[in-house]
Length: 112
Image 1 (cartoon, rainbow, N blue to C red):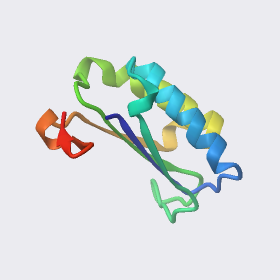
Image 2 (cartoon, one colour):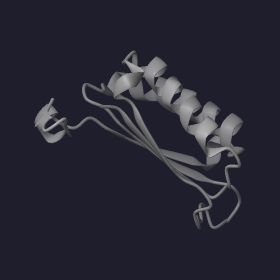
Image 3 (cartoon, one colour):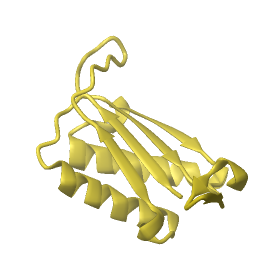
């Protein structure tokens, strides 16, 4: 049910390793089984942030039950991860959080 979508202007050399790392990180941060986590990566994107084409990233984290009270800590953790894994400084990362209603998240021919 959690989905982390990563768009970055940097190029990732080992995509599989980055996806596995991000998957485990999201599961740990949210306290959810990794068996439900999905991560997508779009690297090498043309991004302009603050009028600059310096390395940047836009992350989207969607998860059922995500609380507003969690987003500040998640932002810190994901920005730190983006700096380490993608080489994108925290001040060049935007993160969009979403908590869709259970009926709006489908899986295995049903919804949650």
